Image (tube, rainbow, N blue to C red; front, side, top):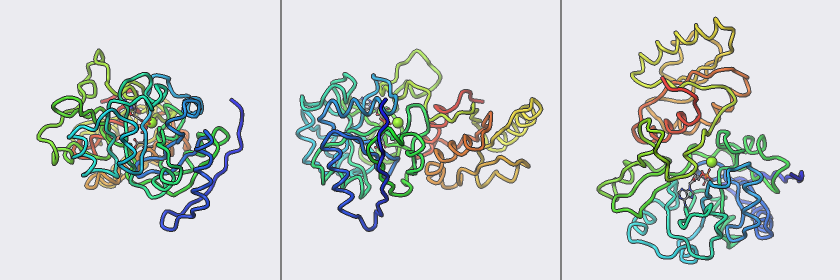
Length: 349
Ligand code: TXA
Ligand code: MG
């Protein structure tokens, strides 16, 4: 791939510099790539209606060709051009959760290139809840296809520095708008069946969705250990979010987790390996050891979601050989956190 000169610009989301937004929009309109913050993770944007521009996203990320992209909009009016019809269920969801971390699947119109949907007849759409993202979409007047702005397989970026690590020299512009907030990606929801199905757990929880629908299920391929089932969201097939080190996630009762991690720690240290422990505010003092990263507070799992990807990247920086990670309860946002941890890990205990 040809090396490009990546412009890195800071934008304060409380006081947006419109000149910088215009500059980003011009790049997008000309078919270039711009990374920008959303409320979940940083996205790598291109004009969703321009097949050649979208192709560049796959190239820059090293993304598998069969993994479709999410199209981002800033106003509900934009949707008509992109989909065949808007079902009643979608109206309810958009009213309640947009702008926000919910991605809804629709039957695509012919305006959306198959490159965006990786050949599927459905298109994933969301309206991000972030002033900078919304301003860019509004200003460019185009729908923006944007996956997370990381190299495929690595943890998603929650700070501009993560995007710079992965994509500097590969894309036209990186907008530094600070940390993202939610920290895990949007929920991907299929509403084509009578009971809506969560294909990827994310920022809008099943509990949130149950305020709109009587029933909501998870894609069976996300549950249990049946490897025969193929996830309906292609992105869920791959090992993902992965630090360089091997990672083991420990599930169960918290005191058992601590005991198991201590035993494993001794075993790996004995083998001469450099170990990292991903702990929580409540448990950190149980480990008398240097490479402990506190990912957040068990009582407030939103803090864990917000810090998870940064913690995984920190372990890479320390250069550990193996990460022993405490699992958390799968209630609320915990479901999305555990989904990412399991995907990042090689083993579960
Ligand atoms: O929060 C987010 O969703 C972030 C920000 C940037 O908006 N974006 C993001 O995109 O996480 P990405 O590409 O990293 O993940 C998109 C997920 C993948 O798992 C993909 O397979 C799924 O959405 N997806 C996209 N279109 C789909 C479709 N038509 N049917 C099923 N799954 C789809
Ligand atoms: Mg991603």
